[in-house]
Image (cartoon, rainbow, N blue to C red; front, side, top):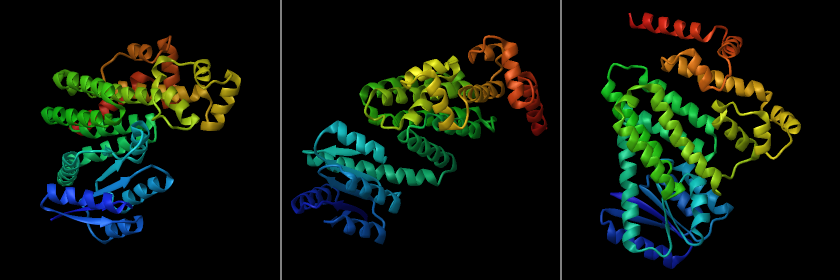
Length: 358
């Protein structure tokens, strides 16, 4: 029998919530806790299928409680019931990594439906973890969720590339790859749920376009561009909303990393940071340990490597794609960093791949 832990410091709320759940979900045992210490002890003492917490108002203590529950019982889904300003609540919920909450007053049927859905999702995730492909996909989606919550665009991109490298490494089963990348893209779209309906429409539009483009699914780099676009939609939403509670340094790095293909200048970034170009240059060096030009060049070279390995795009096109005015300049910059020219880099890796296949 499944168990639900209900925490509320209000005796009447605790009783009513417990009765609604036990009546609406007959095969469930409801365990009630009146204090945070009792709740944590119950979670430590045995498996709970759901933790329901009545939080009248968010404060540091309540956030610390949710974090403690997540550390102690990471597999237990959490449902928060709260009152107050929805925007403020949703911001706290999202930063804590919780996807589901109910606003008071809520109908009993809503509470039962939410509890049932969360327990069902938890069971499905547990079953998926026993299946290698689905389990790995969920691990990468979980990493993306954490990186989104900490507003780290570059890490989101790196995680996406890493997953695609893993998936396309064995390209024999094209249909399996197609199915998997569509499922992964659907998972990325789901990560945008906290940002509202308008963002969801944009993400679903990208997803539906990707679903019907079998030619894009076959090509690793085109798949990456679709996922990158979906991440950009979410970071656009963060930039425009109060979700974007991040220190100035990380916000600046996100701005650079998101615009690195465009050949974004130091003056443009300094203006974004509301600093003079001279002061920003020094500030950036203290922040990253690199000067601005070196940071941007490193980012462009990594993009160039990806395009050289995952596409048949001519070197001249890659140069223009990365906003290099002259192909020779791009080739020299690439060789200084990598040790070989772009053409040599591509040929070396293709020969190595051919030897592996023999």
